[in-house]
Image (tube, rainbow, N blue to C red; front, side):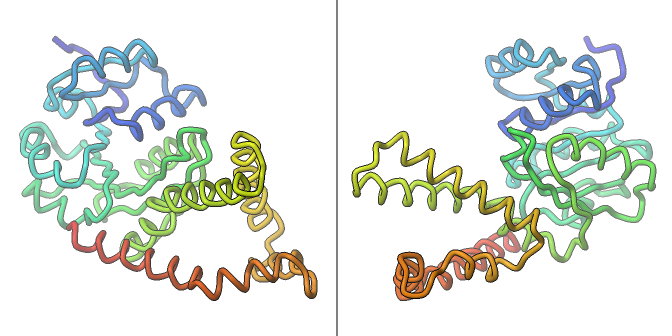
Length: 270
């Protein structure tokens, strides 16, 4: 039986929750003993406890009883099942932090059926290596000091940007789902390199490091991506020839259309 208060509770202990917890602990934001996680998979819970040293429970209501900050780190379709379990234990001190595509603050509020303090977030999987980026917004009930505490938590595994909630679905497409696009790009680049004789391990290394370096160039130079692209494209050279083929095959349009479809899907999840 749990008899103590915890600083932070996670309902759901998947990969994102584990990445967040690991960063929170390793960066000294909270201690392992200040965190508790619930999950329906006892074997996975035991493994998480062994790896991270946190407290665990199979009962979601225990999280709401003993934590003021509650992270709903389950899939969007599970909100309707999980929230009713914790409603009786959520009060005016409770702070609900959502981590789900397509779940607006209003839709979550309706599931609680009462006024609740809600912070909506959208992190991404590079949080695993503390290189994530999280979009965040809140409802009017959340105090500045509470928002500050949550910003500190999410800053432990990457950058944090406060945005208007109406922009959250766009964030899903450009960062939440986007690592998958980049992994496909890296895989395709590596396949092409292998086709031309480069060993597979070297191909992944060159492709991944090039993506990493290119991203840092955008962030650290402040230059427009088109300017950086032009710097690589010599007249009559190999790069402009490759770009010609990408444009011919609709590369840019395919990315835009894919991301717009992602946004529409996120909107339909509410």
